[in-house]
Amino acid sequence: MGPPPHGRDLAAAPLVLTWEVTQACDLTCDHCRADAQPDRHPDELSTAEGRRLLEDVARFEPSPILVFSGGDPIKRPDLFQLAEHAVSVGLPTAVTPAPTALLDRAAIERFADVGIRRMALSLDGATPAAHDAFRGVEGSFETIGRAAEHAESVGLPLQINTTVTAVTAPDLPEIARLVEAFDAVMWEVFFLVPIGRGRDLEQLSPEHAERVMAWLYRRQRGAPFRLITVEAPHYRRVAHEVEMGESGRDVRVGSTRAGRGFLFVSHTGDVYPSGFLPRSVGNVRTEDVVRLYRESPFLRDLRDADRFSGPCGTCSYRARCGGSRSRAYATTGDSLASDPLCPYPGTTAGSATVPEHPERDRSRP
Image (cartoon, rainbow, N blue to C red; front, side, top):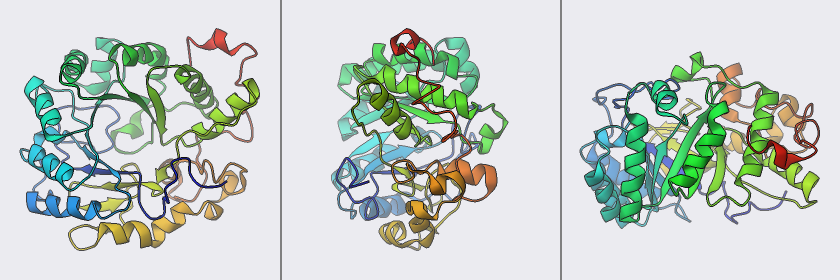
């Protein structure tokens, strides 16, 4: 399929590395991958260990985007010290704080002051009632609105993250309008993987997911924000088929999946292909994160689409897509199995899910 569109070797360095600095969080979100708790874990990486990790991550060439995640990263009192160190060693740095009372104007100003390049906030409903119910805390929706205003006032670029479930999917059109209203530069859309608290949530059917992806692709064309999907690599196929069907042009969107362009470090230092694929390949306390990424047999297998089984193993899009390895693992216990959310080569975006007049269908996924 040729080199990735960004021109980097994803076997040598990830595009994004997320460090879950803590599991502590004051929210009780329905879908929480981390099953977050109110208090910090006693075995979290220390400040000194975190600084060493950041220095090791900076040895990747080119440097990945470093994301401070959680839980709620603001629950760590040394977060700003760690962020300042990440910037000082040359890492482009982002943060994903929880929308709680801790996310006030002072915190956002400090993010900007230390050199954070982007702040991501999770928005999972188009109304206070819908979003707050999903997040488990009243007032979370209003906190996001205030935080977006503060970010704009200090010049801190904003990203909105949304989790797609059977409950949240109907709100996507209105959420997209809010993404524009918040002047966000990116909308990152996560397709639910049934782990953590997310096991109890209703997922979309494969056919519905396909329609949502086709709608997302059309919605982002001409939008002021960039849109990417997480744990839905078949969005690349859907986008290609929609564009070929409507304009005859090829299009490439996204390029990473678990272990291939993405790496996750837990609050205790365990290294995973993704936060949604809980199979550790080592720990940064005793092993080099650069070597783990490049040489782990498990990660190498995840990067080799020819090792996949079932439809993902024979699909003509396996190099471009590859399916969600996290969802395959969560549902079958086999990370090389097929992604059950993908209906291809049955109903595809290039046939039944592409309406004859697509602009008539822009209002709903």
